[in-house]
Length: 487
Ligand SMILES: Cc1cc2nc3c(=O)[nH]c(=O)nc-3n(C[C@H](O)[C@H](O)[C@H](O)COP(=O)(O)OP(=O)(O)OC[C@H]3O[C@@H](n4cnc5c(N)ncnc54)[C@H](O)[C@@H]3O)c2cc1C
Image (cartoon, rainbow, N blue to C red):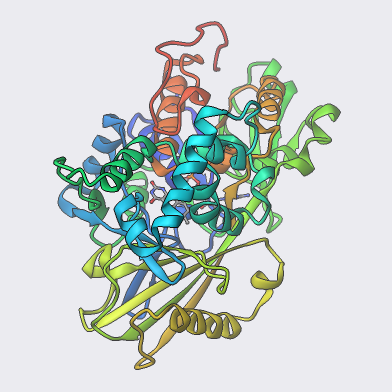
């Protein structure tokens, strides 16, 4: 087989996995990454004066053994098993998550608990008929009481829009493991004084985590790609994705090329693998996408995110890896405690670092605040919540992250089908990963979609369909179609 050239947009988990596996199989790989310094995309780790932090803590957990095998193959014994604790801060108290009714009752009141139960029974006896939105889904599954207390305010902070405008798909994807029957059974037993013989399942789940954060894995993958002869270019923002259809017809193998925001032009390639935001891809493709799709572009939207990391000298901190903040007095939505992810994330145990996560829209009021204003806001909110904190040797870093969350509106599935159909006329263009496919995913989904595209490229035809990978990174069909060929 000729050594084919593969152009990859983005050096996040999806692009790097694809590049890594293809480079191992002898393909000539070129990866172009917009970030000027770091690989890893949303899963990068930033280092700052002896502290390290993720853009939101990144757990390594997957139901797909081939994905776990992959990341262990790359990092070996550099993975640690970590315990998980992540509580909800609501009504100025900390609640266990997943919710435990005894805990809720103890911290709120019996009346509130009864209200939760009655509203739950109500939706079970009179089920909601037309479940379209996040609000419908949570209310139908948990009742209005729990929805208002533990879902509404946080979710609206995350998405910046009312819950009735958010698709039910997001709820089904993110909350499906919360077992309400168990919560209610526990409540009834408590109410009637029946001792619960069942051993309370520990909240402390476990997950894998690289000693120095996820960036450690992705940096190692980058090195291995380069050892295999592949190229990873940083600071290269792709601004044009061009298919030369005439050359393609003549079966000339170099039919794609990329252009960059700095005005330069890249090498020609046989395949393009894109992990950049889907909207950007559609806007920058030539030949242009059909006019019917152009009208859809404004509907493809994203939620942005920023994190303010406070680093200070204090041994004592809170016990969680992160906490969810359900409190309208503050703007922060989640707070990470990085040394509980790994002790290597701080210079020594004498130090602590918190990542205060704010959901926002690029150029909105929060996004546009100066770094200093954000630091002041973060300090004020940490103090208001009452977390252990000190201004001794205080340092801070603000990181703004555009395109952090692909938004699921009510039409996102229909739109996705239309886009996929239209893109069939672009041979050897492969979309993978989170923003590449506009999927609210975890790293394992990005990795799995990359693995399938690599298989297709190696086989020379479209045997596997990455769109059939679900949010658990499980491929839902054995073999798709052998007809559509990949040149
Ligand atoms: C706050 C937060 C917490 C998370 N927690 C977890 C977790 O606990 N566990 C987990 O597994 N996952 C978690 N995730 C999800 C995880 O970050 C993503 O699934 C993963 O990073 C997606 O990988 P990707 O390669 O598909 O996309 P990305 O990580 O988005 O990488 C895409 C890359 O493409 C680059 N790019 C974009 N446009 C261009 C362009 N025009 N030209 C060149 N380069 C471009 C970007 O700079 C980026 O580096 C979390 C995400 C967030 C936001």
